[in-house]
Length: 512
Ligand code: FSO
Ligand code: SF4
Image (cartoon, rainbow, N blue to C red; front, side, top):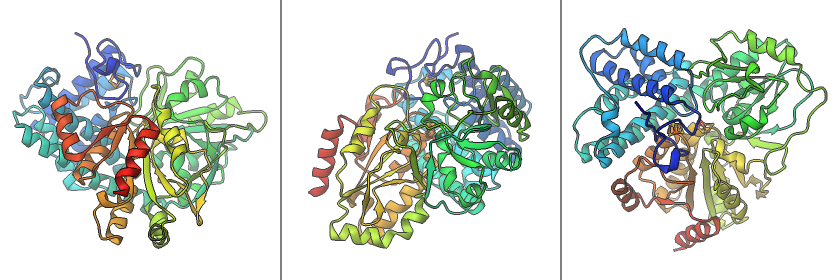
């Protein structure tokens, strides 16, 4: 039996991985992840919605996101856990979906992959004690719809509902993060590493970082964020720890090079973990839903990570490191709270013509060539424009100093991918202030996608009726030509072309 997976942007030949994942997932691991989805679909059809079952569904979906879990033993164990909860005869095989009519498969894939993204965000909210019954009901409703014989219209409605629920979920996570750790505020983060023992913490989980900071408090070990953990520096209750020193490395796809023989321990709290090379395997640790064969998996006692960092000792001298454009300062902390506190000034600058346009250039980074489009695009944006950014795609340009417009920095890092919620809040507030729709604002979205969290964010933007999104570097393989036609007609979504052409088209359209 061969595997089949086409859920991410780097899927083989833009069609699907069938022998082994381009991400490094083995055929057997992919088949087990499909089996995990089968059992989850059986669970929502047989078992009641309670705390234990919702956790199984949420974490189970999260484990099947790209670059989260490569550990067959861990996945098998999880399948057995779910099996014990299935108390009726319901049999489903996700392969029937992969073989079905391409438009139905396309719509159901949008729901299923979007739902995986929502699961990731709900997981982070739950960890901080935040829950919502509408979101929980939707996991059961949407998953149980996958085997059903539904019309395209019914499925399309469910696709948009996935976007609506994701908006609610990102709102819940925003509330969880800001109530627990305070509102993000502007902070300069260094890319340089101090001498001495250190730990690099990757992924997206704020709670794990807090636990690690607490457990390393008086141990002489410094902590550096990696990838999507960078925005953590902006939260007052996280940056109060003086040993949270800076940010190590760039976006996820560079980790095999950047972690090569690193004299530090690395903790992965969520995606994106790549196949772990032997040159640094002994110093990698995973926690929660992340797993990799022969890598030590920990629950919430991080003593082995700390001991490994002490044993490795870190760099002997302070080490100068930079982002990909040579800058060594990253500016973070422009969530909705700080941007909206400057809203009056931004509105005034838009009215006076000092700010002519706002670009949201955000989303995931990735390994494929062509993603330098986003660096070039940002470099080309006119000096009288703001660039909002979020998620790991920003590493293409977040070490650039784009200057300021009358005291407002031109490049505003809003945070992680889930902080798309901040961008949406800001856009809605501006629309209110100008008494127009978001589509009428001088605001354009140029997005990059890679994995399934980006799918649910896209669905949220569609639910909100946002038009003219430019999406790249390539379009999802799981969207059929017919569904793509509907999306382009209804929402005017377009694939990216070249930075100058796209910029010209955006600015011309907005002048009309
Ligand atoms: Fe990136 Fe990975 Fe945050 Fe994703 S590190 S690619 S969209 O996991 O979730 O932005
Ligand atoms: Fe292929 Fe992406 Fe699936 Fe990995 S997650 S197997 S790269 S489609």
